[in-house]
Length: 266
Ligand code: 2NE
View: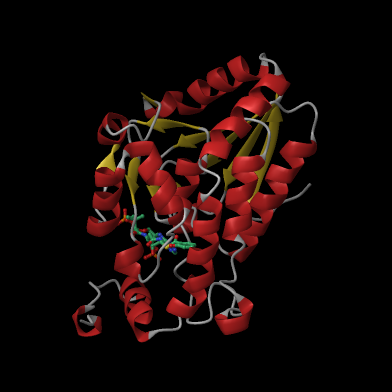
């Protein structure tokens, strides 16, 4: 299958899905998300594939989240608003990564920021390059992923740290991420893909049914978050129509700090 925003490669039973939009630090637009869903479906249906690696092209970024250059008050594809949703099938993508019955390894080769950070959090395992940088930006740019991005993150690293990440919107290096349990392993940048392939090979040689059931049992314990994600993503199209959200979006596009003070209500 040919993709526009991705590269899809198969290697000894491993699928490598690479977001290929390095000019925007691998931010995703509507097409990218559609293609990611198709790529995960391809890996799901392929009986040769036992593990998936998700990564980004270039040296600067894994993924910088939703493409802020195409976003406006009607969402990411101009079809949003009250009836149309966000214009990004992001919730379906999250479900694919969680439900594909094969372990997914995030190979984080740079920035994992905003919705890009959420993607690695949802993956089963994360291997980070020493140069990787992690963080959420929603409250800075007028957005939120208050489903897996918050509730599942808190499961992974604990409530205090998850709240810190979302409230302060700061960036964390690979060592800090490892300390908080956000990543499994750190390797030098040039060894990242080799390390991800090594873990994927170990996985591919294990019982597929045992791995599938183990993944589903881990998922079952946090399955209620799906409902929280639905509420969060359902409310986001309403929020992005507001002046408050527009201030964050414009500030990013105009390369300035957002001024939210006038939007504070008692
Ligand atoms: C990632 C970060 C921190 C990097 O900063 P820096 O200074 O190292 O690079 P720079 O110059 O900002 O970025 C390089 C180029 O990539 C573009 C930039 O605009 C810049 O382009 P030019 O000025 O050279 O033309 N770029 C970077 N990220 C982009 C993005 N997401 N969309 C479009 N263009 C992008 C810094 O760039 C940063 O903070 N980026 C924005 C991160 C962000 O806020 N992402 C969206 C969060 S909301 C979200 O993902 C979401 C959600 O909350 C709910 C549902 C779905 C999605």
